[in-house]
Image (tube, rainbow, N blue to C red; front, top):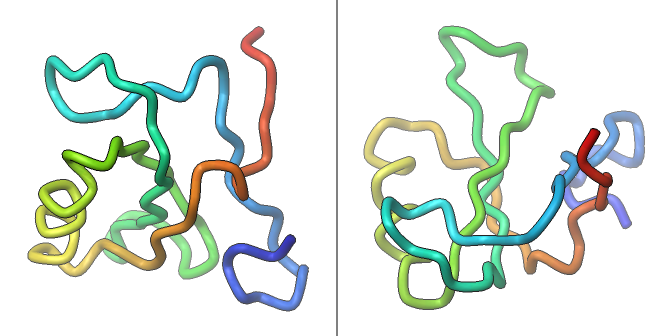
Length: 85
């Protein structure tokens, strides 16, 4: 599935290992992928991923949105999985 809406020209970000919320101190299973980039550092098609549980999805999204970094939020099941090295 093309989670970025790019028509398949850009690969979806990979989720590596366990899907654990990215919020500080949270060890809950992540249900969401917050796709973001910093336009001052990254090319427009580049996406980094923060994972979020239901409790932290809004907080992490607001943090990224306030900086103009948030691009998309998708269910974690739509992220491509990659096993850790």
